[in-house]
Amino acid sequence: MAEMIKTQLGKKKTVADGMIQTRQQKIQEIQNSVEASRTDAGMALSRNMHVMSAVVEYIKRCQAQLNEVIETKHFSKMMHTDSFKIWRSKFWSHDQAGDHRQERNGKQVAGGGRMTNLPNIPQRFAWGAPNVLAKEGFSSGKFYYEVQVKDRTQWKLGVVKQSVNRKGEKRLVPQTGYWMIWLKGEGQFIATEDPWVDLHKRETLQKVGIFVDCEAGQVSFYDVDARVKIFTFTGYYFAEKLSPFFSLCSDTCKNSTPLIIAPVKYA
Image 1 (cartoon, rainbow, N blue to C red):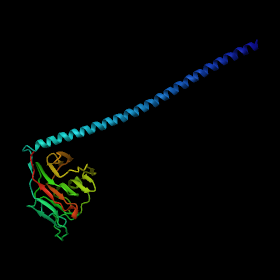
Image 2 (image 1 turned 120 degrees about the vertical axis):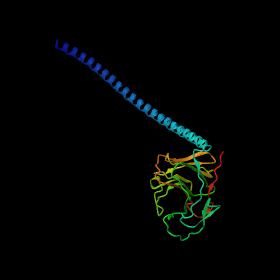
Image 3 (image 1 turned 45 degrees about the vertical axis):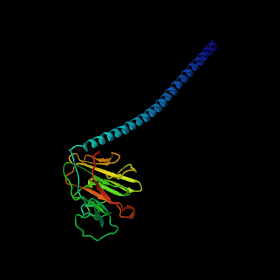
Image 4 (image 1 turned 180 degrees about the vertical axis):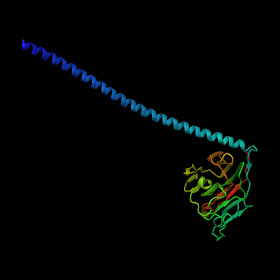
């Protein structure tokens, strides 16, 4: 009798062990399935995030291109209105770091090929290469002017506040009173935002248009011939008079071509 009971218990144990093993296999299969689902979900999420990032970047590029088209069309429209003044002035002969030549009634400036000992008056820049301010500035309204840069390999153009440090400023940024674009040579082209912004150098750039809106706190630069915007400084408050700024950057024979204040043509 005891032997029979032992045999029956052994059979039940075998059945129970089989059921346990089957359950364990099912549990393992479920765990594997969950893990695989997590992996697939993670991969799908990663792919979706990559696609979404690409879509967002594409939308940003399209928006930037659209904004550029809108701003350029708006700028072209303004050229045919009386909403701003065409700025016409001359270079101011007392703001250079060395000798330079002014020709054609002060409308162009070029290197003189030699350095000259000049009086250290407060108005004179005493750093770097020949730097020149316009004879007249402005503190309100909207103004526009054009400068021919054709064949020059280096230059700076823009506006500065009249109280800028002229005796050795190292940070040429809006916070120190400089709103400029700068062709530095060797293909480097920047806007003096803080930090500096790298710009795309257009090989055909021959004439730069500078548009200043004092009330809006904006300074914009345009490729006149291509009729496209190069860069805009925006969101600033001009608490004092601004003066157009011109720099030859160097005075080598390679850079003997002058900067010229060009007459504005309506097209």
